Image (cartoon, rainbow, N blue to C red; front, side, top):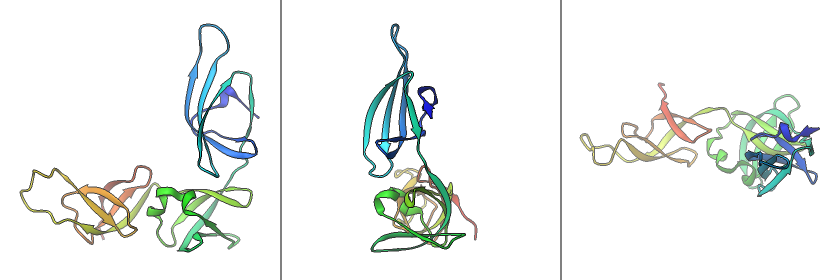
Length: 187
C-alpha cells in the first residue's frame, strides 16, 4: 500500500479499479490542520484528467502494471501492432494510447509496452530516434531574416523546427521526450 507521503509526480496508483498516474503534484501544509496533497491525475486507460485532494493518513493501492519488451511491427486499420520478443504474442495499441509517440515509431523498433493485465495501455520509446527529412524548405545563403530554424517534415509525418542547414533527405536525430531536433546523423 502507498501512503500520502509516497505520492509524487509519476506515481501510478489504482482508483476505482483503473490505473491512474499523477501528472501534477502539490504539497500544502496549512498553519492548522492536516497536510494536503493536491494531485492532478490522468486515467491511463481513457486519458481523462481530473483533480483530487488527499489528506495525510490516506492509503492507496499501487497500480499493477508490467512493462514488456516488444518490437514494433506495422500499422493497420486496427492500430499499431507490437510483438513480444520472447513469446511472439502480438499486442495492438490504438492511436489514443500512443498520442504523438506514433510519429516516432519505426519498423522493427524495440520499445517497452506498459501492460495492465493483458491489455497494452502505453508505450515507452527510446530517448532518441533517427528519422529522414522528407520536406524542408530550401535555405538561401545569407538569409538571416527568417532566423536560424525552419519547419520540416520527417518520414513519419511529424513536423518540427530544424536548423537552416538541414535539407531534404538528411537523416536527423530527434529527442522523443521533447520532440525536438538534436543533431544530423552521419551515414
